[in-house]
Length: 413
Image (cartoon, rainbow, N blue to C red; front, side, top):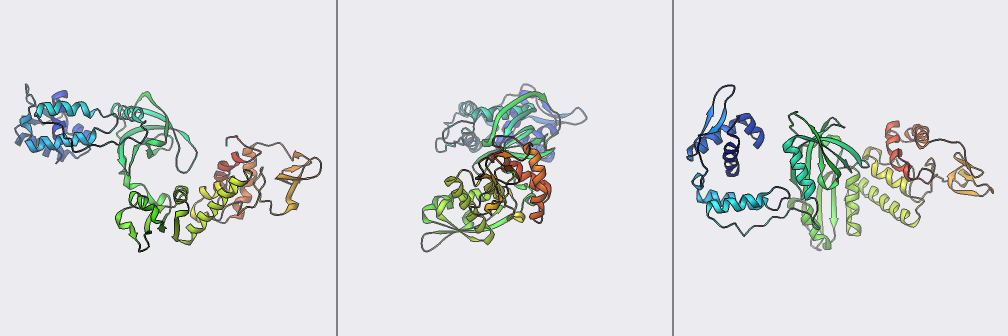
């Protein structure tokens, strides 16, 4: 039973006068049965709380009741102060003021053995946190730009439900009006947050954050070997049972991840101090990405499309890249230029360094078209050359990397 919840329940009843069991259950995210058990516990502790039956009933305190420190034992008072101390580092909660008032009421010093600071190094984020908290409590629709894992930044409209701290990060759970479903957003990726004047009355019940549907993206079990120099990351980022220290000082890690574009970027973040032992397809995928990064750094004209295709494709389409190794490709349609005869011609008859003969001839493009028209034209061919890929899959990939091609640079799909 939460002592902090009991205290807050008394405080709410003092402030509001009377609340229904359903309202209290929703406020504390517990069952109605738990609320009635809390009422019994408060009554046994000497707090004059009672339940009023009937349609207009609820839970209330006897009139003229004043909260005193006698409501909690000395040990319970110390536990409550410690709990508030652990919240004092959370941005926007205002728990420091509450902590000072309760310390004075209980005539106990604030605990000094514990300090929690959940803000990121370098600060920032407190304004957004406070705005989100206010929007949740006041049931206000919010809008923001979000950089998701699988797509470019996009505008979202959300009914905010709750803030969750998990795995060293803050998350917002809410009902996304654009996707018509519950979504979880990492706070660090939220930009241009606006709390609108629109309110909502829809009851929100987001699923537990651990219940993200695994089936939405295939999982991959990785077996990794980390250099001894990465001991801090082995212990910071993996569970103890996932890490095995080897005799030579290196670490063997076995862990399961959703197999999406994020996990390959994550593996690349270890640089040369990681060896992917299993599975083989993950070794090939990371090696391909590393080669594409090298190509991109050495020659800005190549690499964008191949890298975008690999990072954006699912494991079932891991070979669905339109450019392999250091093969150049047309900067208009993305066709690999594996044969010099495929290159277009400049006005002086010399081979074009950028475009294929189907897109470009005699120094001019073969026809006027928009980027979207080019995508519509190319998608069926890409789908046919990659079994298991649909035309919509092909278009989705093209819309990510076509704006990086020389002809379409800067355009939006």
